[in-house]
Structures are given as C-alpha cells and as structure tokens.
Image (tube, rainbow, N blue to C red; front, top):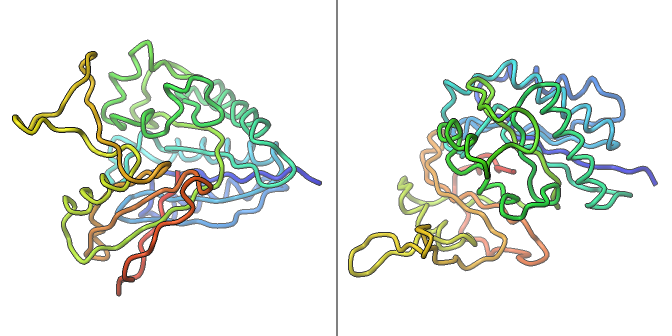
Length: 281
C-alpha cells in the first residue's frame, strides 16, 4: 500500500481570492498531490487548505505553499477574528494510509527544518513532532499571537525549533507538526454578543477559564505567579467565541482534537443562517 498523508495548512488570508489561488496553484504543481478543499473565511481572514499525497510530495507542496504565502501575505496589516502568528499560521500533517504517526512526525520535522533553513523563517514543531510536551500544544505556542511574538521569541524557552530566533515582521512565524484528524464544529448563536459566545466556549473547552478570587474578582495565581484555570467540561476540545460580521451573528468555534476521547457534541437547534467557515488547525 502506498503511504498517504494529508496536509491542512492555514493561511492568514481569507478575503483576496487572487492571493489564495496563487498559493493553491503552487500546491497543484507537485505530482502525486491532490488538492481536496479550499475554505476561506472573511471574518477570520484565514483560509484552510486540504490536500493529500505521498509523503515526499506533500512536504514539497507544503514548502512551496509556505514560501508563496510568505511572499504574498504581509502580517503587518493583517486583522482577523482567529488567533494567528504568521502568514502560514499552522501546517499539520496527518497520517491517512500505510504510515504511522511516528513516521508522519518525522516528515513534519523534515518540512520544518527545510522551511527554517531555506526560507529563514522561525518554525515551531507541535503535537507528535514536538518532543518537549511543555511546548507541543498549538494554543500555548501561539499565545501572544503575531503582535506578542517580537518579545516572546527572544525568551530562551521560546527559541524556535528551526530557523532564526528573530521574528519576521512581514511573514511572522509558523507552526508545523503531525496530528490525528480533528473535527471542526461551529455553533451559531441567536445573539451578536462575543462575550456570551466566549462564556460558553470557556465552559466547554478543556482549558476552561481563569479562576477568580470571589472576594476580589481578580485572577488567582499559583506559587510561580501564573494564572490558575478552572477546567472546562470536555477533554481535548478547543473553543473560542467571536462575531461573524458577514452573517451578523456570534459563533462558538470548536476543534475536537481527539475524537476517540470526545467523540461527539450534542447539536443545538440549527441556525437559520448558513454555517460560517470551519476553522482547522
């Protein structure tokens, strides 16, 4: 059986079809790769691309797409609802057939090394491609986003796995890794309130919400001075609330990152509005 892997890069451009097409055109130049889906979102200003192929071909296509995105997307002027840190924000590889997660992680490391060396772009590895579990979670790596990384990248504990330890103002930084399939599950709310959407998201997501001192209303901190969180109800679920301008509604966007441990969420009453873009990472 041929080895097949999937790649789902997320690019920080969801409003300019010409830029998106130039990036996906690069992917389609590579033999033994098939482009499956291109999913842009205006409010998130982000496009999720899905393609599959043999490992070497997928790595080459991903490299070309990351290179082109860095040429076309200027993060200095980028705004969008979704957290992001670079022109190619995240680029996961997923084993599909004839290949193990461990082997897929090695291909992800090869891609990360190539991007760091040839494009001189700061690269962080995540999930199965990251041996240091203190920095394997995407949301932990991306904390501070593009705006905060100019300082963050200078911290010894946040030196990139590959590429220079200098934040690139135009291209930002990128995260490359290997993971299982995830399910992107969005719920539209009958409200325009981002605060309400986030409140539900904090209740649902595994990371939960900041624990507050009932006497002072201030965040509780541990002995090291770090904020203490009250966990949410669902393991391996990431969630965020935001306002989707083109639909005039607030939305809870969730990623189920381990569908074996958290196989489903009971759907609420369907919205009359069409579902906005599913956001993957």
